[in-house]
View: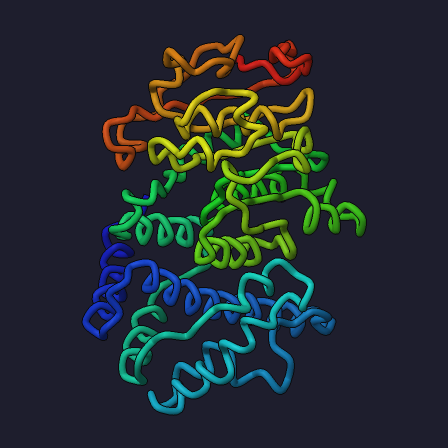
Amino acid sequence: MITGELKSKVGRVWDAFWSGGIANPLEVMEQITYLLFIKRLDEIQTRKDRKATATGKADLAPFFSDDQQELRWQNFKVKDPEIMYGFVADGVFPYLRRMGGDASTYSHHMKDARFTIPGPNLLAKVVDLLDDISMDSSDTKGDIYEYMLAKIATAGQNGQFRTPRHIIDLMVEMTQPGPRDEICDPACGTAGFLVQAASYMQRVHREALLGVEQRKRFNEETFHGFDFDNTMLRIGSMNMLLHGVENPDIRHRDSLAESAADEAERYSLILANPPFAGSLDYESTAVDLQRIVKTKKTELLFLALFLRLLKPGGRAAVIVPDGVLRFEQGAQGAAPNSGGGTAAPGGGQAPKRGLQAIRRCIDGDSVLHEDGLGRYGPRLVL
């Protein structure tokens, strides 16, 4: 939960952008994220430098080479506003775009990143305000993201909603991600579920991730996230990189409109809070989902998608509106053999405007059900 002091600091940064001429809330969030990202990189590099000094062993993978030291937060923040502006626009942002190598998903999404702060004075003011925010705690990063998401006025129109940290933690703890899992969030946004799943695995399965092959699998094959918003893809990629996942599969995909045939029965764990924005045009819905459920309701379409993506024996924790528990009339084939649900804690999903949030687990370890097309998949149980 964000504290009053942190909320006040982030609020002052937000107000500085608005008074400086940037009124688009998504753009404000994106620019703040870029600056917090470069600040966090510098903090991590400072820790690595201290460790290298203490142990006498050189840092083999520094974020900043010897000729890139001027790009570090601690160095450019003390420069005059005009000089700082030049360093950030012509040095820091090109550096951010190149991070991770040309083949990484991070660099793919960052290639369109733009530095849109209009002048040196606004940049100097924002840097000064952000410098007072410590990024050492993962809770702080999550709290800042949640608070900024709550301030995005367009979120309610687009169906995008933040998921409170305590609910994400509950869902991750219940599903217990392991080193052998392939984890997917088909509507990943800022990748909050994937970040917490990665943190859980690093904490609980630390020894199993020490080997070279295991670490490669963790960085490149374990985490998969889809979204159709390029801003969210950039923020999600940065969020994963900050949390030690170097090259996750974060990619542009309209989960309900594009066929999931190449992803079918691929994932052992799904964690998601997809955007339930009402109904879709039937013609724009993927044909393979229409075969599972005859409906325009996004909540039922996402549920069908989860069943399609899960491999036999897979499991999931997802958030759905209260109406899904009653399986609305006319939605043929939606969620057969389903069990009960558990209401989220009070206030946990207040932005879902009149919809009571429900945490539902899809546990494929119990029984497989026949879907009417001769195929078997996970049963919905609790």
